[in-house]
Image 1: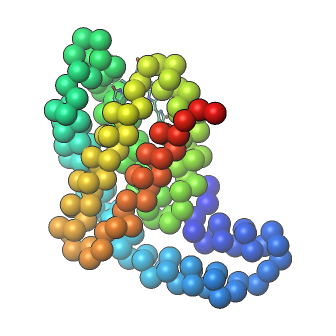
Image 2: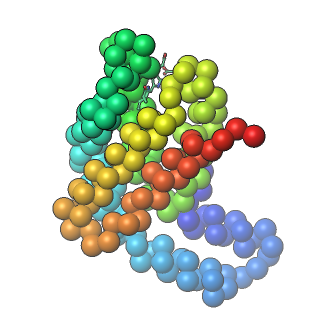
Image 3: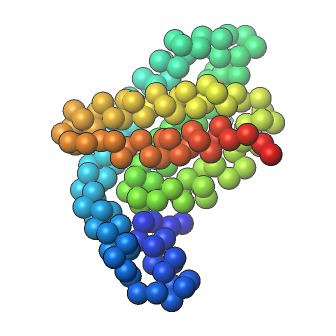
Amino acid sequence: MRDAVTSLIRNYDITGRYLDRDALDSLKSYFGSGTARVQAAAVINANAATIVKQAGSRLFDELPELIRPGGNAYTTRRYAACLRDMDYYLRYASYALVAGDMDVLDERVLEGLRETYNSLGVPIGPTVRGIQLMKDIVKEQATAAGIADPAFVDQPFDYMTRELSEQDV
Ligand SMILES: CCC1=C(C)/C(=C/C2=NC(=C\c3[nH]c(/C=C4\NC(=O)[C@H](C)[C@H]4CC)c(C)c3CCC(=O)O)/C(CCC(=O)O)=C2C)NC1=O
């Protein structure tokens, strides 16, 4: 599992280079945004249960067929599995925000996920929608918590969305 610093060092070490101007700029930007990243993780940590619950109810309002007979989140067990998955996405998004690197998502969340979802008939489109709804809620809360420019919060949610949506080759 890598973060912004270890990823950068790794790349430079592979080619035996000192940290050049580009490297220093990206390190500055990582450390410069550090407080905001930690603040965003704190917002997520303090509100995780609410964020998942709100995103879940918005999702099921938009797509009520998911929780009707025949829907993938129908039955208490599958409904709970769905919200648990949302909770995974949120928790790992908070790790990726702090790390400033998406590697943790590849390694711990996305690896093999589409295959699992396909074999269980878990629909990708609505899952992606749930991830985007959580992103919106986290950004609202980050703004309310005084984070001036919460655009960086998008990154892990958009990354998971992109990776999950990718077509099979
Ligand atoms: C930390 C990394 C990690 C992830 C991401 C993960 C996902 C994950 N979600 C699963 C199931 C599931 N996931 C869902 C999710 C949904 N169904 C819907 O209709 C909605 C669109 C969506 C919620 C937004 C459901 C309903 C199941 C149960 C499917 C079944 O057993 O039939 C399963 C199958 C095993 C199980 O039920 O636990 C896995 C492995 N597990 C992990 O360890």
